[in-house]
Every structure is written in structure tokens, then in C-alpha cells.
Length: 364
Image (tube, rainbow, N blue to C red; front, side, top):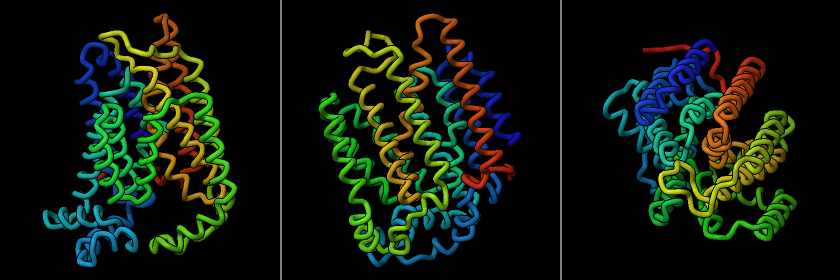
């Protein structure tokens, strides 16, 4: 884990730079993360060996069956296979795939944080310690889709609804689960009030109670998932991790609600976002909790939660970074970093199989 702690140490020590040169810090931080992700060994990450092995095979895969047939029936989505074919045409070395994917992921992260984060260093530290980076090195297709998802969120907040739709659909060509991001459009358009929360809670209860019926139908219709069926494997595989995630997201929501509430319209020149955006991002975390609860019935669903968990990368730093007193902000940053680093260490030391990123091997 030395590589990760060296990365964290660099992110922390360079943090003062962000006060004067925000973009410079962002570029330096993203570059360091890019090196760790793009030049990792082929054994780092649960799925990395599989993608490395399948790289030449996917490059030869026939896409003439059609876009929709590939999306519905193929194991790998059209967009990912097409990307591999293009990269293999350039080089047969699977290193190129890791580098290109890492490049896209850090650029998307930079775009997301550059638009929303008021505390870039803490956002970067959370990206590493809350295992977003670990998942990026483990679940390649999903995290490409997650990166598109971060871009789509910015488009949604900027009222570019057609761009939002196109980016979400593009994300789905890398991982079908990205289609769940479409629910963000009606949520952002509505007034997030107590009445709306009750309505969505009721809807979730219906989904939860009828899970067995509709999930079996869904998995039978999507050929790539027919082997899953309704496997009650949450308890068998990763129920502890899912329970931890539910507690983690719940704690973050409570912390953010108790923090300084944004204004309806931010002060001109303020880095803060408005009240509507704040409520929307909190609602995203609540959706993450909902999918995590469903994952207790079928653990694979827990991976969908990551599309919504990205909201924590801006909500937590906002709550800490906008504390009134400088001393409070300093203490808040220190406490948050200590908790996050401890969480990262415990997960990687005692549950390394969750991500498969330790031991880290650097390959130039």
C-alpha cells in the first residue's frame, strides 16, 4: 500500500497550492492519480487480468450483429468493444487500454470537481480513500460509464438536457447499468421537499417488496445477465461491505444536512453552489443508499450505487471547506482525512479481495 500512501502524502502536502493556483493543483493531482492508474501492473485490480487477457480477443470480435443486439445480448457492450478495436489497431499492447481509460477517467474527474468542488484537495483525497480510484482500477467498463456519468451531471446542472441525455446513452454503451442515471432528470426538475421524499420512499418500498418478481424477468430478458437470476448472494459474498456502505452514506448525508445550508442564490463570486444543487446532490446519495439496500438481496446491484455516490466528492468537502472559522476548517479537514485514510487502510488491509489493488505493482 506504500504507493497509495505516497500519493495521499503528496496530495496533502501540495494542498496549500490550491489556495493560490487552483487549476495547477488540480492538474498536478490528476497527473499523479493518472500515473498510478494508467501504469499499474496487469495484476492490480480484480478485473484487470481479465481485460488484459481478452484485449486481443475483443479486438477481433464481430460487431456486424448490430448495435442493439450487442447491447442486449453481448457480454461486453458495443462502446467498449469498439474502443478496444480502435486501440488494438494502434497497438497490440494492452497497456494502451489502461492508459487511455485512466486518461478519460481523470479528465472527467477534473471536469466534475472543477465545476462543483470548493475544496479540491479534500475531494482528491476522498477519491482515493473512499475507493473510487480502487474501483476504477478494478471495474473498467463500469468506471468508464461512471466517468461519463460525472460529465452528464454537470450538463444536467447547467440545464443542457440534450447533452445530458446523449452522455448518459453514451455511458450505457460501456455499461448498461448507466441507464439508471436517467432518473436524475425528473428528480432535478422537481421540488425536493418532504412530500417528494415520501413519494420516492414509497416508490422504493414497492420496488424492494416486488424485487424478486421484476428482477427475474429483467435478467431473463437481458441475455448477458441470464446466469445471474435471483441469487440471494448478498449474504454470501459482500453483505458486510454493503452494510458498511449504507452506514457510510447515511453518515455523510446527516453530516451534510447539519452543515451550513446554501443560499437560494449564491453570492456572486462565491465558490458555493445553490440550494437546489445541494438538495439534488444529497438526493443522489439517498439513491445510492436505496441501491445498496437492494444489493442486500443481490450484491451485484451494489455497483450501480457508485454512479450516485460521486456526489460525496463535492458534498463532504463543501461541508468542511465552508466552516466559518479557519480553525474549524483546519480541524474539519484533519478529522475528515484521518477518518478517510483509516477507512482506506482497514478495507485494503482486511478486505483486499474487494478491489484487488494491493499489493500495488508499478509497470512502466
